Length: 515
Image 1 (spheres, one colour):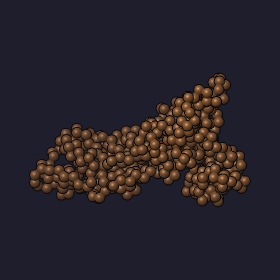
Image 2 (cartoon, one colour; image 1 turned 135 degrees about the vertical axis):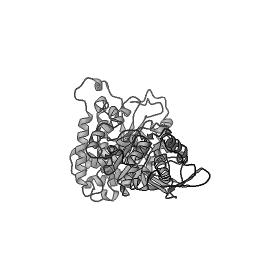
Image 3 (cartoon, one colour; image 1 turned 90 degrees about the vertical axis):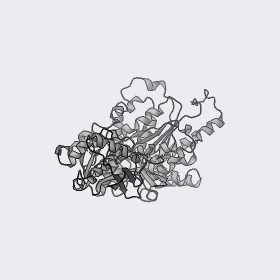
């Protein structure tokens, strides 16, 4: 008898159903694994054999052939251990194929038979539901993440023997219906960013009121920001607190965020808040964008999906590293091409860059403490390429706060108040875009900016004059209009006028002055 089970192979965050077939035939004992397995999957033989033996089952002393179909689809990871082990028992006559009919099985086996949590459980279950599967057998350690997909019935198991007992119907209480009332209770306590985020508030930042105002506008429309200022002025503090003023993620956004993070951080809890990702400036292109040799993983850009990607000391990044973000900033996804295929990860992030005004960082006021030459200063900031800066919407000059900023005051700006302003402005935008396929100002298509969402006539003439003079590019023109809409939503205006567009233009002039 051929033993058959079903599992899921991930391709990026998309998944395909994989049929695991096992044939046990007389002959010299051997184990053959077919279907483009990676190195981790090739090692499954020893894990499965030890797990079976330590769970009280005999390893068949025959020729075992395991086929993972479709054969052309690359398979990665150790989550195929459990379906392979169960298929071996079916082929050996210990179980029947009817017991696993319509059940997706995922899980890594330890040598003693325990089940370890698997990577990518959220995208795997989403793919299973999309392809018509309604039940899944998973390690108990993945149960929290599995609650996100309420359409799938989940059977959590702690050990291989418990998994067999569940399939045999001996442990009915092992059944868990994902979603439902349990979803709110689990998601309210399992976000790994909860403890850190509760300690951050914009009231901690002293003397940066104008910068906070512009960051609030950036949060409304998800605009990209460059902050330039000397060390110690609060650039990192400002960036770290941006997620505290972003509205909560919707259910669909929670699914997208956790689909990505379950591939990278399988043991983390459910993420319900906008992520904040801050790679070091020495990060490579692969770490920033994603990739790998065999197992393709999402990079920092995708991990910041629906959140903030912050890069401090941006001019110190290796040449070309930041430029790799140019395409994701436009397309809002990352495509990684390899010989095995093209992998696509979503990357709808808000980019925040921070830079010193010069290599020594002391170019403050009149710059009397700075030891850098004008050539050194220009070369330093020109490490940020023109095409990258053209995609930046807001450039902030973050100066050192004065002594008045450190006086005790009860009127500090709080994240709660700013978050309410952002929420109201986004509601205005959502009502305006209710017939559109987008909800944020940063997503307005270029052709609509010249038509339905065109600013006031005088403001548009101002932008076109700058375009004719070569002061701005067509991309900058469109980004200024989008930013103008965010200023208008905060101010309660029906359409961007001269004031809103002038503020958007001012943000680009800050950049020209710095360079």
